[in-house]
Amino acid sequence: MNDFSYERVQRATDALGRGQRPFAAYVAGGTNLLDLMKAGIAAPQSLVDINALPLRDIVELPDGGLRIGALARNSDTAAHPLVRERYPLLSQALLAGASPQLRNMATAGGNLMQRTRCDYFYDIGFDACNKRKPGSGCAAIEGHHRGHAVLGASEHCIATHPSDMCVALAALRATVVTSGPRGERRIAMAEFHRLPGDTPQRDTDLEPGELITSVDLPPTLFADHSHYLKVRDRASYAFALVSVAAGLRIRDGVVREAALALGGVAHKPWRVPAAEAALVGRPLSTASIADAARATLAGARGLKYNGFKIELAWRSIDRALRTAGDIA
Image 1 (cartoon, rainbow, N blue to C red):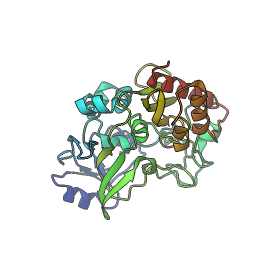
Image 2 (image 1 turned 45 degrees about the vertical axis):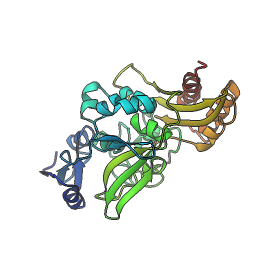
Image 3 (image 1 turned 90 degrees about the vertical axis):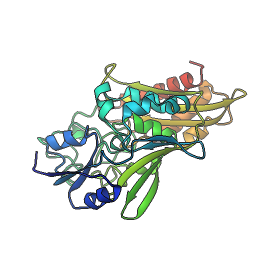
């Protein structure tokens, strides 16, 4: 681990001033950042501890939505009465992630900032990683890539996004609120994380020194019919091979609104509005679910070891939607 300075700040203005310095990083729970530093992947010259900032609250918004402070712990968010009552999809996703000990430390903002998952990225013994060293190649493409992306990948990177929380937030149409050099910004979850393209070293659209202050959820539509399904190699403390966040608003036997997002299959939570539209205006059925799965997985491409994920994702979409719609 490299040498670095450490400073705790009490005010957001101080955090922004220090966070915009070259090679500075914000730290809260540190559950991902410290692992990256110990592995020699991240090497900030200064850490700005933001735990004293007043960003822990979870409050109802005037429009009936919910604001989750960037420093709200994952365990607190999952257990919050308003989250459990109005956004059970988010609570389920949070409880599917990591271990209780990590959930007690991890924050909403930190969860959004998790780096993508790839063994070659996390092992500096492999030189070929465009995420660590742009232009060096992608060892995973010809290597062991069983857990890697089948959607939205490029010749430069096939890593996957690791977060469960973010999959639910994508399905729920959350907005990420930030403060930075341009003042406050509101970034739709669909635009917050990036696909690798030819710049896989960038995971998000945040600017240097920009600080996440909250995650805003719109008024709930899916409290009565939602399900988070996580398919993994073992029952706990494992990343998803495929995960599905599914939400439905059903009236008179017809789907009026739908939410659908996948995890474990792409560089970001994978949401296709056309797939949700395929469910709306119809009773939930084998045919409508198949149409939604087909739209979600359009363009999916597997490699030697991860091609099984495409059928697994199809079956997972089917199961999650049937469970959410009470027709399982």
